[in-house]
Length: 178
Image (cartoon, rainbow, N blue to C red):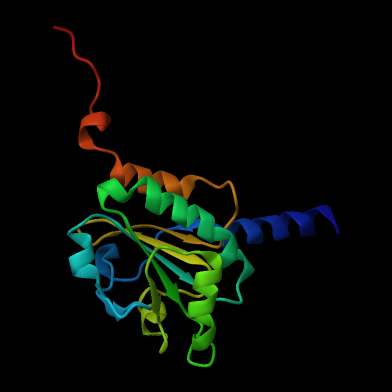
């Protein structure tokens, strides 16, 4: 492979795994939704935002990078549970593969809620075109960050979560002289 061709390939790969802001709605507002998870519980974005930030992870059972992202999502859920972070896995497997989702979730030992986007409506609202795609929504309903793709060890998206969950006191913990 020529050097220029390799360079173009690397740029394309980097763009595919980039941290991006989604222009999903005017002023980067998160599209409202109400979904049922695999247990039958209703997931309402407006209600979830009252608890803390919301992280949506769009994924499918056949997507290897999606499976690779799950340990990081579980770690974020555990680490930031106290600030109210809600992680929701949104399966885009579709009606023909829906029977595979529940056993897959059990096999992967996923503890965060899993919703089914059977008609692709949520995927369309959030302009998801590649998997996995993670969307971080703050308590005001703004889309703070999105990550398209997954690369183990990449920390930029986790930094956005950390910034939302950092207590205001520790952010202002500059000592002042007396």
